[in-house]
Amino acid sequence: MATYAPPLPSLPYPATDPANKAPQTKATTDIPNSNITWHESLRRSERETLRGQRGYTIWFTGLSASGKSTIATALEQHLLHLGVGAYRLDGDNVRFGLNKDLGFSEADRNENIRRIAEVAKLFADASTATLTSFISPYKADRKIARDLHATVAAGDEPIPFIEVYVDIPIEVAEQRDPKGLYKKARAGIIKDFTGISAPYEAPETPEIHIHSDKTSVEEAVVLIVKYLADHNLLPAAALNN
Image (cartoon, rainbow, N blue to C red; front, side, top):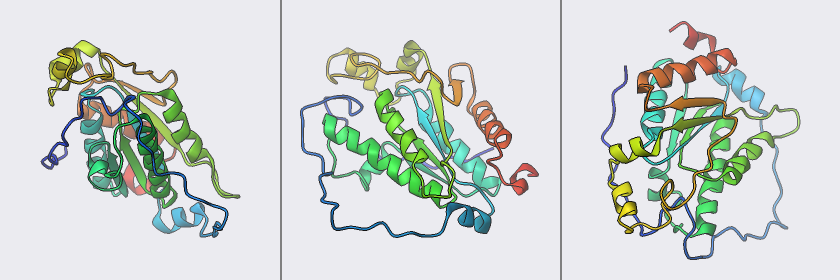
């Protein structure tokens, strides 16, 4: 169904899980805004008419090794095959560019998610199917992302925000452990690791709940595409492919 590109080289993993709290460093968010003005642009409905598709964000969340990035990659490729403009933002990849100035402190971790949510909203506002793949273990961070998509210009509807919880038993995630992170966490090399020594706050009412230990990548893609079709988020041409 889909072909997979070789992964980018892994970033050196810090001694503290980046999804969780670490010693504080200053985030770069304190920018004066008293001298700037919001400039109106095209309405999203106009862009959607021009491009022939709706924009939305699919927010994948789950433990490390749950399969978030694998499913998101396959979904992106499948949507492109259907003729749907899609773009994937990956938790590792963005730290090679957009967020390479951020560390792994609590403040920088929060800023990491905020930036991604803002970028995802921009892509979705431009009528792109936007896919994000991050552990994002805390409900508060995910709520910020959701609320951001609900804040839109006058005359536009909220941008659809689709939370996909990629659920996996911790023991299965440990068996997979492609980066060896769980082994390091059990050995105490990585502190505050999500699912081992730090919490993962599971979504209570996600739009889509996938048990990745029982569901193949192909089946997961079918489930998500069905949701998109049922909620009128796919163009007519894609439904006929």
